[in-house]
Image (cartoon, rainbow, N blue to C red):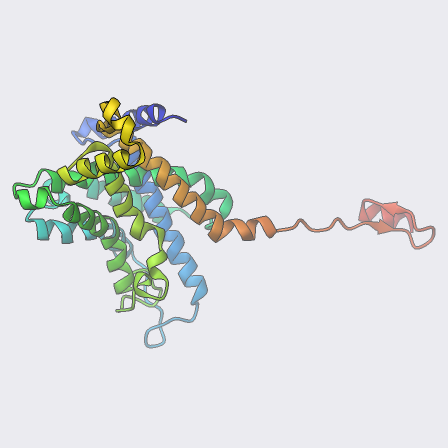
Length: 313
């Protein structure tokens, strides 16, 4: 699939769809898929945690499960990082200006919690969903987050590559960091704990460094700030000095849609590799049970069915 095809897929999935348009809400197919995916993942994580710690209680009684508790954790994941970054930038977070997205996640959370059963986390399901994860995350990192910095009225912030990368890191990871810090998914109730990101080798989590990586890569390709334009020129000039002198098109900025599509490809490679490492080995090592063959005690002949063997004997 080429970058142009991925861009067309973005254009189709970002078009507002009914019945939301009937209510005046600009909610697209991509928004719905992202909400469903996150709510399902949150429930899967809670069930895995509950199975891993079945006897985890507070004062001898397990903490009760409620819709508002689960919805609070989901909304924290979505808006926690944005709320922190918006406060530092002096901006209003999106959930204060429009109720469409929060209501979408609340409605999706209610539907997911009402389901009698959801599939467990396994390689056969996670492998194809890596493209959806990369698709939605690239949209967040290249389209939704950068404008908060690039269009800021303070030129010191709008022209700072450090601010751009730091805001991307906080918005993309801040919500899950708060959830892990407060143990919002723990079956025994909320309590302070060391987040997984701060534990040994927590820095190797793909989502942590993938956020500034993809945002910086998109900024480099599109020349979002003067620093990135100069860096792009320096990289191309160092690798192809004669070509740059003869062909200025080599250092022209990319289209924003192509940069977003390229970010999706990079994230898909990272997420697919993580899925293979976490679940692929166990899936690959699963061996089918050896077929049981019944033989007659009289003449030793093979029989494929148990009933037939009993009948012969």
